Length: 159
Image (cartoon, rainbow, N blue to C red; front, side, top):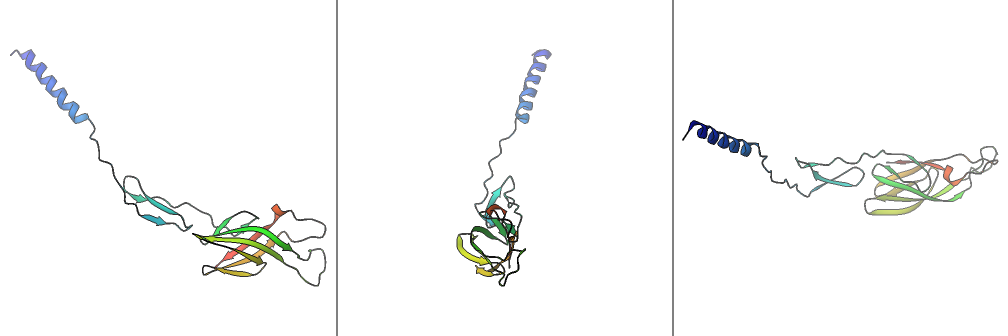
């Protein structure tokens, strides 16, 4: 064998060696367990990613105020004011014998449990061991102005 043939043979062997080293190895897929973590808002997340860590829970701002047909989340409880049964509040620009009241139909939901209840301002209802109170209703009644349904704001507390 000539030295040139030896060099060519050596180069071919070297290139074959380098190509095997440079080829990325296929990694076997990672399978995460199918368990779930329950988030504060009642939803669940599973394990993800290369380390099978739990996905982040959704960030939910807990609100205390809402309007008609709008849902808020407060301490794991969804509160949805459905409709105003009556609004007999004394207008702020009139002197009345009785202060009157707002009667509000509300849907309370947590997980698979749901219930419709009626609130009056300052009243409390109990749902799944939580006390829900309708703290305030705004805007105040006024004899010179009609309150549009979309202008009502209801404030709740959950204990």
